[in-house]
Every structure is written in structure tokens, then in C-alpha cells.
Image 1 (cartoon, rainbow, N blue to C red):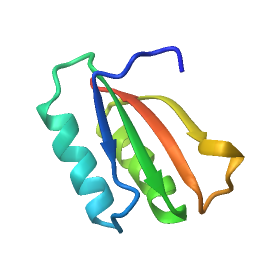
Image 2: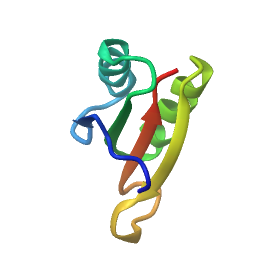
Image 3: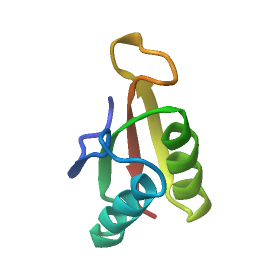
Length: 82
């Protein structure tokens, strides 16, 4: 990862829609330009959380699987607040 995160959030135990709600609450507390790293798990959060953040205008810096896991595994999403 090229960006050092200012904030970390683990939403792996959560289910939709709480995955996005918790992520959105974190991003709302951040200053413009700050970076958050979010751990998420499962196909639905993997699709919905990055898409919803991008729709709000935030920059998705990376989305990578931990340990080469598939779509149901744990992923790390790095996002910069607009």
C-alpha cells in the first residue's frame, strides 16, 4: 500500500447495510484528504462499500484481498476522503 492510513476500521463481523453505515460514519468524521483502511468480508460488502463511497465522491485508492482469498474472503479497502 502506497498511502499510510490515518484511520482503520474492521467491519468483517458486520453485515449489510451496517458495513456501509459504519464506513460512512468514519469517513464523515475524517478531514478532506485523509485516508482510511477498511477491512471487509463477503461479496456484498466487497461490491457495495467501495461503490457507495465512490458515488459520494471519495477516491478508492486500492482494494486488495488478504492472503489471496477469493470474493468471500477478507479484503482491505483504502479510501481517501474528498
